Length: 342
Image (cartoon, rainbow, N blue to C red; front, side):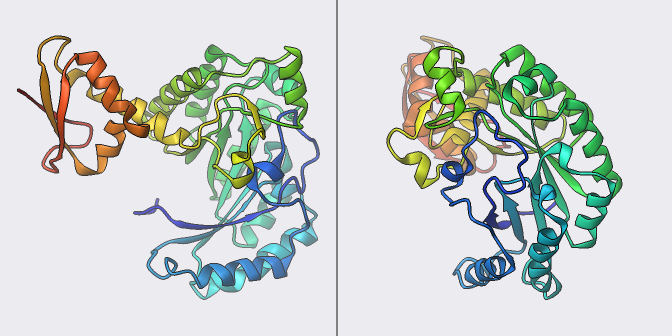
């Protein structure tokens, strides 16, 4: 584990290597990157550009990440080309690690050895669900057993392994996704991402939603499911490193997201929800105070305030007291607040 969040330089390979097109998928819009072949020169150009940024030198850990496609399903020649282009940057200590994202059924013993030999240290598996019926309805083309098998294989070779999960898939439910989370906890990955499903214009899922065949999660349901899942995963020692899709320029365009729990700050909304749960016991009961001041660790003030001060309004509604001030107090431990009643 690293002491700080690494500087990640993403290299997008939208849909490349993917043997199927899932009903929900449009990688070009999700990443705002055109689906064109990425070669070794592209990698070198992107890494050289990243080196020239003002924030580059100040970061202790710098990482190269291949996102958006099924990396391990690329032809071996292309895998070698891309990773060998990155190799000198690792050897010189300019970058310190490489991660790739891939499908659970794209990795076998030979492919695992190839990735290891070429310097990859982190592999993220797009599992999405651990329920075979849900995977089948979404036309993922792999099973939950594929995910378990591949995670075990990668760990045997010494990789750090991430699992990407997607609540809200066709056929899924809060109960089924809860069972998925429990299975993932038993598998003990090194990290998890939570991407609640949104409906993107032009996908097959958009047609299903329009015809009534699919009903997306509401924003409030998605926040609750992700908050509960994140809490369980992190209590089990599994960090959740991302919640919600990146707010790419394409997804921000009017009409691109046609349904589902899209929010440009979804991860912050979920973390704020979790924080509200943590501090509830420290708040006065309804009607016990007319005005209050809250002292708390400075780094957690944004979590209490929430998106556009929704957290403040929520506390005031719950306690029926006006918040006169929120003051930094770093003598308090994380997750603890002190309330002064006036």
